[in-house]
Length: 99
Image (cartoon, rainbow, N blue to C red; front, top):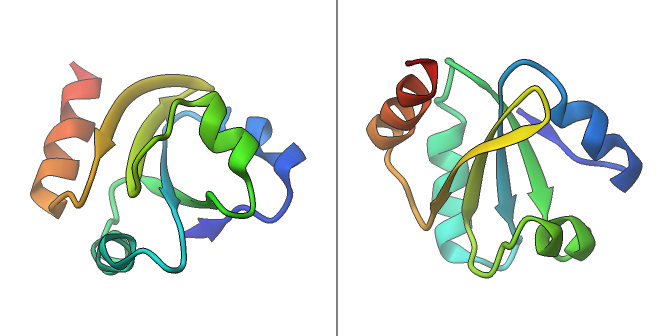
């Protein structure tokens, strides 16, 4: 799991084959719970983007509620999940992108 450090790195990072981006904030309880779930994810790389530090990125992807999880493939948004999501639902969403 990586944390976005610089806004200018975002486009390069989402350009990889498959990436799950977690839009979160430190003060958000459901985001903290989601972080615990994401620590167990071993089927896709995870990038955490703090919406307080990077509001421009969050707004450019229509993030209105957190946590918001977006699957990217080769820089393109493929699927968005809003709210606390189980690891089984994450796996199912990821598998649906392969078909």
